[in-house]
Length: 291
Image (tube, rainbow, N blue to C red):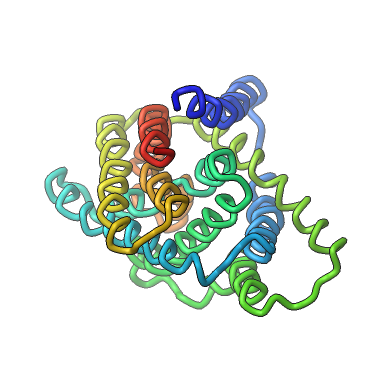
């Protein structure tokens, strides 16, 4: 088991380390890279995973329900911590709710459970993003418009992927292969971008970051453990939900906080310190997921 866990986490963390080293030496402007990833590569990954023949949408409905339960339940559990720490709930709650199921969760799911696991984690990733772009944004800014979410390329790819998963319309093999090749480039780029973000880690609020780095995965794991027997998940789905629960806060939380001016410095510390602490919680989550 130990050898299997090491074999899963080393490729992921080595690519993150590569991004960190490159960013420390070259100080690159990754803005255009991230825009391509969000607008082109990630939507292609989402669509190809959901539209693949290996993915069964109906069979994964309980897993989707579990993912929503972990996200919303984490928000409820985060509320008393915000009061205890005397932090604005608009700053504290989103990083506890929305985890790094994209940058880190997708490659871990693929290495742990293969293509079927990747497709299922993509579902959790898209559902989490959909809730983030709607409820999450409204937590940060209650006056934020709702309709722009439907113009987001990843949201559009989600609905198209679900439509293909339900209808299974005929599509040329060459087209599906091309979309998959574009999507496959997203995962290593996500990891490199995460490493580059870590190179800009802010230590202004490191105490808050440490607390967030503990609360996010621990509440996620607790909720996943609670929901697994209730939802009657199969062994692979159980492992994926536990893996989903142990992940650190998503980088997207910082981007949303920065966009709406909601204490982005504090959110950056929570996200970056939390991701550094994932070296402790990801092996724990994997050991529980692969039992």
